[in-house]
Image (cartoon, rainbow, N blue to C red):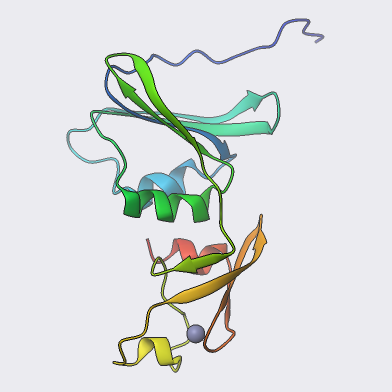
Amino acid sequence: MFMSEKKELKVKSIKNGTVIDHIKQNRAANILNMLNLPDDETPVMVAINVESSNMGKKDIIKIEGRELSADEVDKLVLLAPQASVNIIRNYEIVSKHNLQLTDEVIDVVKCSNPNCISNSNEPIQDKFYVQSKEPVLLRCHYCERTMDFEDIESQF
Ligand SMILES: [Zn+2]
């Protein structure tokens, strides 16, 4: 069927909270897990595999009454490097932040190598270099172990 108009899924807007948009398709579940959602109280709206003009398909998550912490944003960028985070207050977008995966990831994930010095009792920060952004691949600064999406996601 030919569609002359852009088809957009309408999802109810939220009053206060966070909209995570431009999530790579089928990643919404990983992100909800990282955010410890669903819980018993927070209203969450999730759209999976919706049409996107620049991504083909994408996921969207709307969370009522919650703004993401800096720690959560640090994790989110590893799960959805192209996502945008919109903070909504009183139905207005008060901030729009396009995530950017930087070249180094510090103190967000732990090395999966049990013998890595970063997993000893030494006071050493976890440090990785971004080898690839999509799919995400991180290389440990200390032992050069490579961590893929599954390794990263399983820690959140
Ligand atoms: Zn390591």
